[in-house]
Image (cartoon, rainbow, N blue to C red):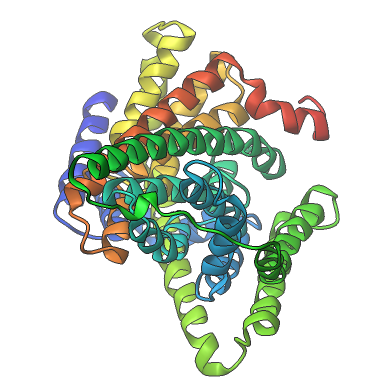
Length: 449
């Protein structure tokens, strides 16, 4: 069987097994083990556990469960609600200030938690009811939280970036720094749209009031005294200090990424104990249970994805696919467009973790040969995968929002996120035109590679 035929069969069997509804980790593991049985030496099955262990024996991967613990500690406490409330108190006079408050709260929470679903859940559980209570349309309220939650995989510390750093053999510190500029760019774009949409909804509410006398909560004005604003700061400052402390430890050279993750987890646990009194076993049980469940699920997917990639490499499927792409002699930017289109399609069905580990062996060699900076591409790929998180049919954040706001029709949630998909596409274009948005900060701080 030719390598092309074998590769097509490998991909087809993978899709069939995944569409059967089987969990991703088991689907990848079964496909990999089956092809090892039929197309590799009989002794290869005896080395499955050894291969998985060797692939996962990375000190960088150790940071994943620690960052998850840090995110769970913050997400399971009232920190998200307090963070959102404080920002809203300070931004309420800005047009669309409530929408901007949600975006900024998502960004700050994402930078502390490193998880998109956790960000959506923590900020959305407080933000969506407050926006709807003040007259914002359900679709817009759901859309801005779902989109803001995607920042969890772009702003450091990002679990997705940790995996990309491992797969692409790139500096994790440099990759984390490269996510800051694009993260700020998306925050600005989302906030700008929030102002535009808020003005539009305000005009519609005003017209409805003038025509029918129906008064909307949108037209009501809120007032907060300076004392109320200052009163909100003490509960937020400790977590801002946590964020700054972790970044200083990592980029100041005081700790490795894994040590930084451990430091962040311990500090987060200490802060929720001091600020919210979360220290009793019954309080800690949900945090530790959530951490174990998410870490186990994620590491199992990672292990099976790495085994899947190993089989692909052993059978020369990835090398042949990469060579086939190179032999097409596409121009540099057409090559990038084709690869990103493929990532977008995968994003309709697969989570970012699986996309990175399954596609890296195929797409990275041609991109490197074409002269693309793999740090820059990692950021672009992350933004594209963010689209997948809020794009049907599988967009994870859509279903997180549906879970915390079950009364909002799924159709409204989907239409609410589509403008943000367009804004992410605009961000990708800006990153292609101005790569310094991503690589400027790491080059300035860590020097040009």
